[in-house]
Amino acid sequence: MVLILNETSFETEITQDAPIIVDFWASWCGPCKMLGPIFDELSKEYTGKLRFAKLSTEDYPDIASMHGITGIPCLIMYKKGKEVDRIIGFAPKPLLKQKIDQLLARAGR
Image (cartoon, rainbow, N blue to C red; front, top):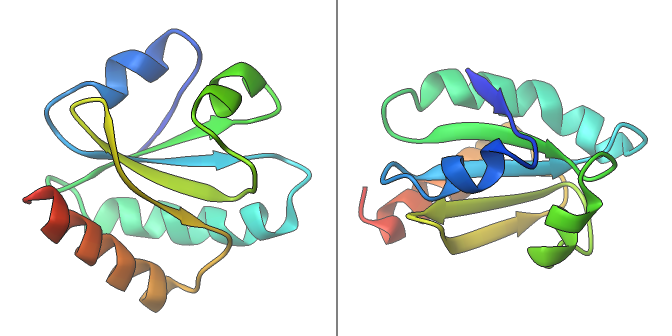
């Protein structure tokens, strides 16, 4: 399941103990649209290990700016409110899965 974040839920979700990966995206972004279904599939594969969420940079540009988003899609993994790492740009599912596994290993999960 992918959470849809807004200005109220963003801080609450990223500061929880369980790690979360946030997809910063926009409706006009072609690579974001290609990543969407892959992100949804991965959210099911990592149930119990990693939470998945999306934040629209169109609707919440201030949050995107505060987190240094300069290119989308941009996936940022947070653990207890701190950025663990980020993946910028589109990646096919096998590569994205490999990167997420590496991030989880680094995050101590």
